[in-house]
Length: 70
Image 1: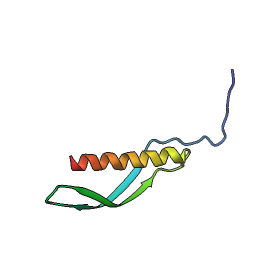
Image 2 (image 1 turned 180 degrees about the horizontal axis):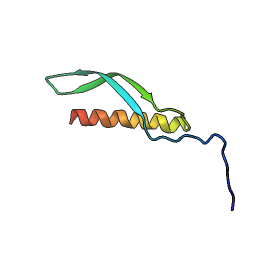
Image 3 (image 1 turned 120 degrees about the vertical axis):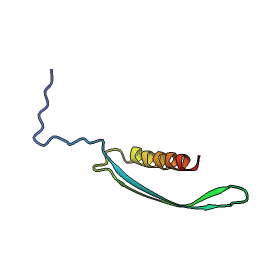
Image 4 (image 1 turned 135 degrees about the vertical axis):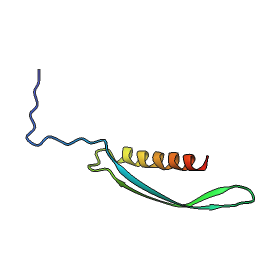
């Protein structure tokens, strides 16, 4: 049995606070929509896995767009 004692335990949180802004262009005749610029601010604390964070942000952006359009 192994015991581990930390003098300064890591704080683990599952909270995050994102804000996303999309600059879009729409053709009213065809109904086609283009995303011109996307800006994302994400307050997530300590980043342990930068690539995973990037995928989380991109996935959240795609999900937000799909929910707002359909």
